[in-house]
Image 1 (cartoon, rainbow, N blue to C red):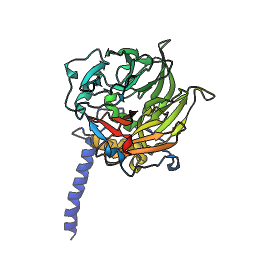
Image 2: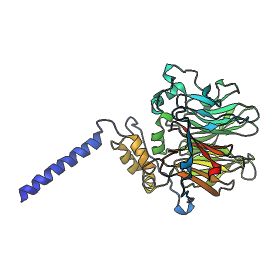
Image 3: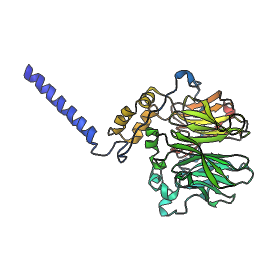
Image 4: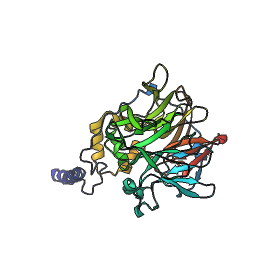
Length: 398
C-alpha cells in the first residue's frame, strides 16, 4: 500500500516542480513583463463601493449600433468632425489622420516627417505597433472652431496642429518644463486657443500601453500649451494613466480621466477654485476618454466595468507583479483585468457630475470596445484604439 501511495505522489510532485520551474524561467518568453526588467506595479486606490455610480443598461442598447467601415479604419482612437460638420476624421494605426468625404476615406494629415514604406497600411492593428515611433500614432483630435485648425495629440510626436487643407502637421510641444512629452494622449482647446492635454507616462511609450495600464505608475501629467508664449507648463503631476481631457461648455473647468483609478476629475480654470482639482465622478467602470456634447454634458467612453479581480490586484502590487510574471501573454492578462471579455460602455454625466444615462454592450457582441465617443447629428460615434471600425448608435433608437 505504501509503495502504491509513493508511486502516486512522486509523479504529482515532479509535475508540480516542473510547472513551478516553467513559471519561474518562462522559457518561451510569454510573460507580460518579459523584456521590462525594471517593471514595477504601484498601489491603485480603489474607491469605496458607495462612491461608485451604479447605473446599468439592461437593454444592451449599444448592440443596436451600426458597425461602419469594417477593416477600412484600423484603431480609430479619436473620431471628430470639423467646424462645418464634415467628417468623420479619425487617427488610425498606420499614423495617418483620415477623412470620410462622403464616398471614400482619404488621407487628411499625418504627424511624422519620417514616414516610409513601413507605414503602408496593413491588415491588422497589431501589425502597426512596432512601427509607431516611425509612423506616428495620432490619438486625441480636436478642431479649433475659430481657425479651423486641427490639433493633434500624437503619442510619439507630442502636440501638433495642421491647417484646414491638411498635410504634415506642425509640432507645437515636445517637452514641458524640461521633461520630454513621452506619451501624449488627448487634448482640448479653449476659446483663447490654450491647449490642455495629457502626457500619460514618463516610463512607457504607447506601444507598451498594456504594461503601462498594469503598472499604474504615477508619472502622468496634465499640461497647458499657451499659443502666445509657445510655452508648455505642467498643471497636475503624479497621475496614474491620465488620458481623456474635455472642457466644460463655458470653459470654466475641464474634466480629465485618471484611467488606472477609474475616475473623472475636474480642474477649475475660473472662479474661486481656479487651479484646484476635485473629484468629478467614479463611473461604473474604467473610463478612457471623455467628450462634451452641445448641451454641456460629458460623455465618457468606458472600456470595462469594475470587477473583484482588478480590485484585488490594485490593492496588492506585489501580487500583481507575481501574476504578471507568470508565462501568460499580455492579451490574456488584459482580458482578465477587464472581467474576462470585451465590454463597451458610454456614460453620460451632467456638468455637476451626476450620472444621467449609460449605454452598454455588456457581451461585446457588436461594439466590442470604446476608446472615445463623440455625439454628432443625433448619433454616438464610437472609436476604439483596438478595433477596425467605427460604431454608430442612433440616439433616436433608445
